Image (cartoon, rainbow, N blue to C red; front, side, top):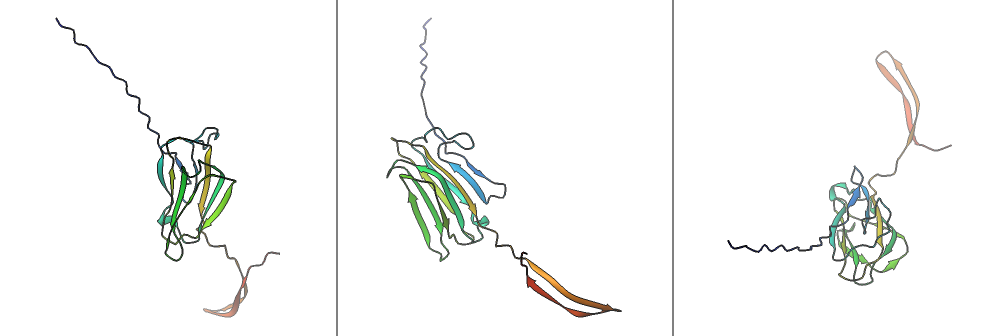
Length: 173
C-alpha cells in the first residue's frame, strides 16, 4: 500500500476591514475613528492599505442647513494617508478636498446643498502609520426655534365671535 503525502499549507491572509461608522438613530450625526478606537480608548495606530468610503450624511437627511465636522485630533502620514471630504455646495458645485499631516483639533461647517450626501473617504498607503483621527459630525437640520406670544381679546355672543388678537415675537424676560 502506498502512502500518499498530505500537504497542508497555511496561508496567512490579513484583511483589514474599514473602521465602523457610529451613527445616531436618526442618522443625522455620528462618530468615526480611524483606528477602531471608538468607543474604546484610541491607543493604537490605524492600519495600512485602507480605502474606505462612508456616507456621513445621506441626501435624505440633508435639509440644506449645513453639516458640521469636527476632528478632536488628526495625525496621519503626510501626503500618503488622506481623508477626503466630498459634497455639493449650496450653488450646486461638487466640492472635494482632503486633509493630511498633523493638525490640532479643528472644525468646519460644510455648506452642503439640500438633498445631497456628504461623503468621507479614508485612504492609507502600505508603510507608515500614526494615531489617525477622531471625527464627530452632525447635520444642521433644524431651523432655529421661533416662539410667539399670543394676546388679545375675543368676545363670544351667541354664535358670533368678535374681537381682535395679535401675535408678537416672544421675548425672554
